[in-house]
Length: 540
Image 1: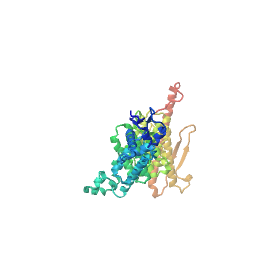
Image 2 (image 1 turned 90 degrees about the vertical axis):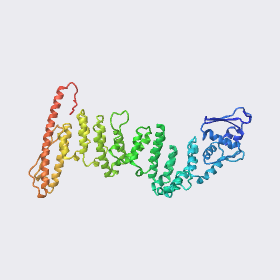
Image 3 (image 1 turned 180 degrees about the vertical axis):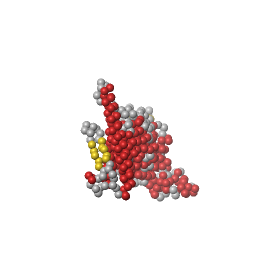
């Protein structure tokens, strides 16, 4: 070993350099602090760098600078590396009074406005490979500031930056007379940079988009770029980890944008992709929040996502419930009624689709029904028909479980036909049938009162007598209809009301018959299973 080479430098475990301590100390404040006072002749000096910016290649440039007495060629390819390495080695002030490397690199970066677009891209790619990345944050900011300025300027005026080099795609097209019409296309002018920037790593895209947002670049263009970036990176990514990191970055950046500028269809496409990726819970929540806020734009096919691996049920009902929660996160009163009704119609279709699933638990079915306020539905007939299907598929439900499922019905918003069907449906609990009957009679009573509101109720030709059986759970209301003395204008209403009266009487008979049958069944089961359990499980 040369006597003058008395310092061994291990650079990130990549390579070991044997250098002259005094030469390096004269330019590096970091090395000078460590070994400046060590006398020549010391047999063994060694330093290990674990996070030297740019690694062994970068350290070699530093040694050349020192051995050449502060002379080195600086260009757009090595300026990033030299800037970060000079900062790391504390070469701001030269101990020997020789040239200052840090100042040289800063001066070179000051001329960045004269760089071509290709040189700028090459420098950024060089930056993203530096380790640690934090050491290059200042120079990255300088590059991105120049890059964003050119993108913003091109979107407003021309399709490519005025400083583009002859080998940049934008410049080639501008010189091609056949592409003149392309330049007239505003979309091309706004998106020409997508392909170039899609080559950057996710951490750089994170910084880039945040700065673009702060510079008020169009959110619609930014969302299109992020979707383009995700698709491009997935095509080249070789591991699931890289895909997951890319997806997390895209979601985080989309979350910063105005939702009205984001394609709902593409968001749902991303959601389907994430089903096979392991992304952070935070990113997944943000994606679902964005989709939930735009749920009125969804279709049934969007919602019919398969359940997670290992689940017994067919569709991911939990996901739909989370989307609904996001949709009304600010309160149902804050959502326009038209949007509420649109989502209610969609959810009714979804409920009808998932109801045949034998693994769908009653509380999940009820959660879907009650996920939206009652004001979102003008009619509950669709919910009733879904409930009928649910009882047919889940025939083993007990009376109590059936009543819980029926609690999702709004009897006042059931049509007469639905109420008639419910009262005669043996799969429904008798209490629910009775409630439907009472509701229909109350509606009829209210209708008659409105028709004869000019006449005191006690003198009305129709009177209603309500009787309650003490100790019974069900109320029975008997309607006695007298002769209706309505004007000619209300003749059609008269016929309608008389028809309803007849149907109500029929429903009462059916209800009483069902109650008697249930009482007999109860008595029979109690006598035959009195030793089994005190409260028998009644199943329809």
